[in-house]
Structures are given as C-alpha cells and as structure tokens.
Length: 406
Image 1 (cartoon, helix red, strand yellow):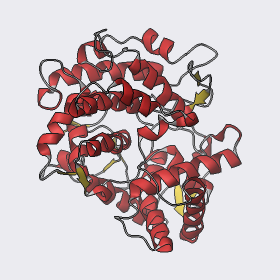
Image 2 (spheres, one colour; image 1 turned 45 degrees about the vertical axis):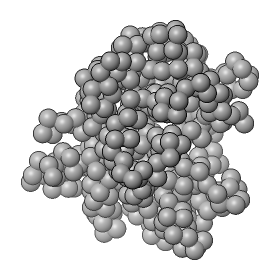
Image 3 (cartoon, helix red, strand yellow; image 1 turned 90 degrees about the vertical axis):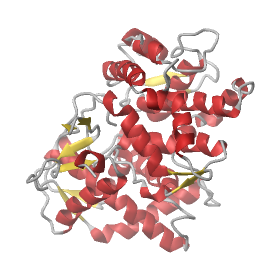
C-alpha cells in the first residue's frame, strides 16, 4: 500500500493520532497535558446527556440527516414526498446530492450568523442553520441548472455558483456575516470541476454527486457494503476539491497535517490524517444506502470526528489541559500544532469515552457503535458544556477557519 493511500484510511487516522497520544501520556507534547483521572467523569457526563436526549438509548447515527429535523420540522419527510414519483435508486441519488452539498457547506459558521426559515419562521444558527439553509437552496433547484428537475446537483450548475448566489440563499449581510463565504463558494465550484473529471464515480452524461450511489452499489457484495469502502470512495472521488493542501504521490491528501513530534525520515511519516468532513459525509451517506437495502458493515472502523465540539468537550471537562495561555488565546490556523495536537488527542479520547460508556451500559461495539456515541453523545455534550461555560457557546479554543475544514 502506498503512503498516500494509507493516509486515506481510518487505520492511519488511529495510528498517527495514537502516536501523539502516547507522547501526551508521557507529558512530552508542547501544548496539551492529558488528565487520565478525568476520563470517567467525562464519560459519565456524556452518558447523562445521552439519557437526556434518548432515554431509551435508541440513538440514531450522527449524520447530517439529524440536522434536517431541527426545530421539530421533518424536512426529510418533505423531501421524500417530493421524490415519491422516482424509483428508489433515483431517490437515493437525490439524497446524495443534497447531503454531499450540505456537508461541504457545514464548516463553522461563527457565532454571529443566523438563518430565518421562511416556512416555519424559526431562526437557526451554526450547523443546524447551515443545514436548513442548504436544504432549501437545494429544494429550490439552485444546484440543478434544469428547472424541470430541480432536486439534483449537477457539475455544470455547481461551476456557475457565485458568492452572490450563496450569500442570498444563506441570508448573508454585513450585519449577518458568515465565516468563510468565499471559501465555501470556491469549494462548490471546485466540486463541479471535480465531478466532471471523475466519471468512474460521478457518471459521464450528467455528472452529479448522486451518481456515487451507482458506484457504491457496484462495490457491495451480497447486499453488504463496508463503511471504509464508502469513506475511500468519498476521499478518492472528492479529494481534489480541497484547496492548498499537502500533496503526496500526486494525491491531494485533504484534511492531513504535519506535526514536528513525528518522524520525518520518510515522506509522509510526520503527517496526521483526520478527514473530518469526509467522515462526517460518509456517516451521512449511510442512511440512504440502508434505505436501498444494503447492510453497512465494519462501521466502527471509522473514527470519531476531530472538530471543535468533541475537542471542546475534552478541554472543558479537564480531560485535556492546555499547557500555556496562548492555547486559549488564538485564533489558530488548522495547520498549527496546537490544533493538530488538540484534534489528535480528541480522536483517541473519543474511542476511550465510547468504551467507558459501553462498559457502563454492558453493550458491545455492535450494539452501541461510535457513530451513535457521537450523536447521543459527545457532540451534544460538547455543545452543552460550552453553553454552560461561555456566553454564545463558543468552543474553548478559537480556530481561524476558511470554511473548508471545520
């Protein structure tokens, strides 16, 4: 296996983040100290939040589909009604189109931006606001380029998206700024170009994200599809959309960053992969595939998500302790070693928190996979503790985002 292909695997994420975690356990990292005595209290806090949200512990997957139900409005059901005349595979293609675009637009919005939904009159912010805004932009045909078939996203239409288009759909004004607006537009435009250049994943006649359904159906055996296969398709199919990232062996690695504490003796040995948005997207693609009758296997090979809610949970509950004041001052670029350490340690600790919760409940990995612990769960707990500690619920560590990482 080449180094580039290895760095696209969930195993590489766990291998490299574990290396940094071992250094933290020996107190040899520059920016963070690991407090093992805080693991059980953190797991207990997460479990309390899980029970608050899901008293029967029947937790759904952590995916974009949860956000489409915010405000007690079942938007997924409305989409399903609009798609009813299509056959099941065509419905799945439309759902892939929607969720791929929505996830790619899901990088941090900042604390100021709000979205008012016309149909419900409700106001949403952050990830939920981005979900609702992208949902309606999709339903209105903004990504289609064909008025007769609005519920799709095509390569040609995506290449034509402008900053003005996105600003209008997302209600962006000088008083309602959205972090990384230009970066999001560039990402959509690059997605359009990439779709046209990857016919094996996205089709030839009308390239669209939804044609990834057909590729994945062909990868299934006996109606079973491994989750890592879905992630690899996402990384190989969409990898070229990421701007200004490290390239190795001709491969754009995406959400992969160097750390000086790792060996640099061989090319790529000092790189730490996270693939946060790609794994979030992978989790979000699984439900439409399950609706087609596929069984998703090897689900727990995927990792947690190295983002500010999960990472904030670990800092706010004292599981990770900043070693110096600059960590909390920020803002830090995603490439900074502060952020690389923070994200790495968070991923390892998410596995440990999940194990502690399973032990407490007497459940197996199959019965309570990591994707449900994230939903129940660490992401919700990270948001809850942030709101308790800081006005506006900002994370404890500030990130200088360009709209393409977080």
